[in-house]
Image (cartoon, rainbow, N blue to C red; front, side):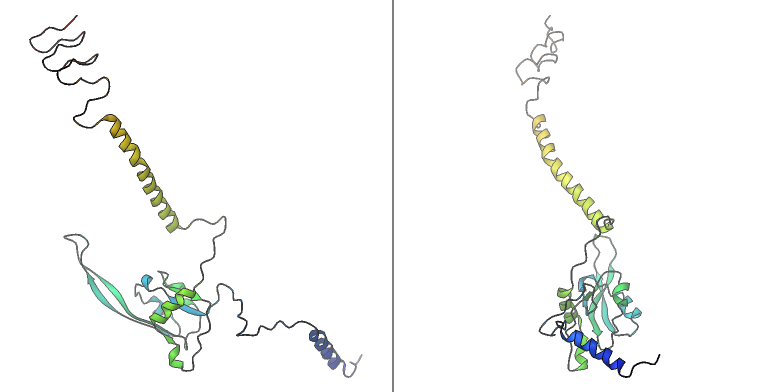
Length: 233
């Protein structure tokens, strides 16, 4: 059966009439900010303290848009007789976002968690040279990086957290044991103080039951006295 002339136009107009009566879902940007997912790839932030200048991100970048400069410094030995060490000091870390393809390889290969994704995307510039963000600008983006998502209820605790928790528990146990040790020392008595029962008496007095007397005094029942004297019955 041949199609009725104008049926396609009628179907199109029917769709238009149905949508005309519905409420618009268009977000009026920039008056209304979009709700982006937490892992949106907007801009890259740099956590400079974690960067060891290993150059791994710059070598793996397919666009070669990461520029890193550094120099070496000599670190004195931590203990006398030790050897001096050298470390890399970061001088420049820049990313040219006019070349970046937002693949995220630099963030994935960083072994020290120095690079992070931020959902911020409003950094358009009128001059293309301003899209090269130096390390100060990259550090400012770190304030917009969202917190990591919580682990699943049945997930295994990270090794770093488990090691830190174990160390904290040992320290708390050592601090709790100190008052008990101090109390036991006070009960036992310090040097030069009279002892507890079943210890010798003070000078010039007879000893307690079951122990010898002090010099110059007679012994207790059942034991001999001091030299030159006889013990009592």
